[in-house]
Length: 118
Image (cartoon, rainbow, N blue to C red; front, side):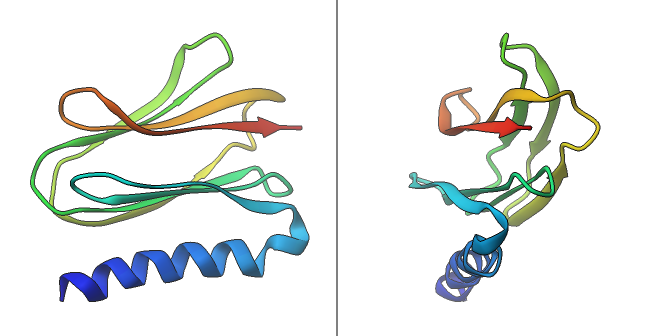
């Protein structure tokens, strides 16, 4: 069952990257960590970012979006085991550089990617 969940996450991230590649989407990050595999996919044409991972424990993870000056403009904590997949719409934000970070319960950044909004 666990292998099926991980496969589903990888498949979802792959499909998003492949199906939108002609629209300027690319896989920004895919990093294996001790509790989950994290994928961050951005679509600069639609100003969207998808973050997906499997939290294999009840330890909390934090997903944060920061502006170019390091100010957090959005943050949420995921504290249940299972698959987390969420699309973030950046359309309301000003053009510029943003960073999407996923941190573990010790506030250690497990994945971090720069996103450019034009």
